[in-house]
Image (cartoon, chains in turn purple, red):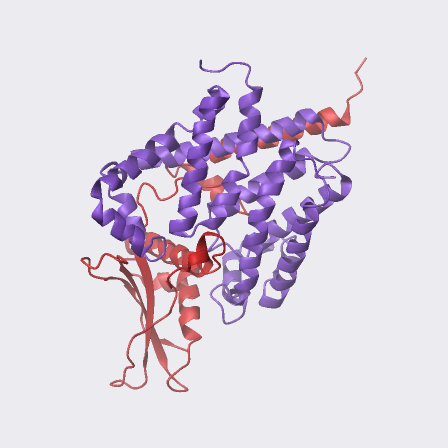
Length: 273
Length: 183
């Protein structure tokens, strides 16, 4: 039975929703892997000319066509659905997540171009959960270590993103968000018009993102009622990047790390005040 | 007397060391490219497990990329430039369901990879001839070569361009113009 009071299980459930959507999206676009597609293996295999000497990878190369990857993505959907029913700490649950992890690793060879930070965060969480929940050998102490790792990676991701923006003149001058929103790739017409009408909003949004991302790790050290401010900010931030920029998979991948942040915050023996 | 080692403790130690190394490698691979970050990223990280968390910084992606191509049928007969439709506008449901983002991201990654490699090709050889053997170049050439040809023996040229999306005040700019390739 699935227990929602288990933090690792909650991390996995949130992530599973995002992974299911992402896998269904790949199924919809599976033609990009066909001989006529952008990521045709006829071409993509050139990237692995050196690495494919590693014979352990070669058997997977046969999978990298539209039909092979369709099967892989369908199996992945079934594995994810299974994870909604079998607890992570059961042998079946662990086998399901291990197969899911294997499918993500294998497909990553074919999706070198086109994958993003949310895919990496998802993979990072899945591998951590596999390693830290191995039946028989994994202790509750190891499960805690896994949650610490996920929380620290999440904090690192926000801080690095914040500092990289802080050193950027385009972010500091408050033009970056307007410029990104005005692209058809990551922006929207309505958002562009809004920021044109209210130029002060550009600077506010840029500095809001710079400051909140840079100091995000404070959420580990602040008393929970203050730490919650960072998580609510993160929720709103990812929700709006999904709505305005179409980055839907980031929402699920990063929301999945929040239960781990909650866990670490509550494990801290001291807080800043 | 040697104490009996508990397999659970050994496993816990191994996983803890692995996760700590993974975290350290992630820290080392952020910001500047150093020798060690290059080694980790290109020699060890086969499955792309070391993320770069600098999202949209320091240079925010403020350009839309466009891929166009044309055919040379004879020395004097060229077709019009035709654009590969990739940057289509999002729908109301894109916040939840957005499969189109993959095509855009692929092209964006490929173009950025091409653009990033242009200076080093120029520096090493003085021209861009060797760029034609790079994976991103071949991906682009392969993508455009799949469109219907105007004649059986035709030569196709592609152009990578960038524009500022909804900001009409900035003119589109050329990134790369290929030679004609027989397809």
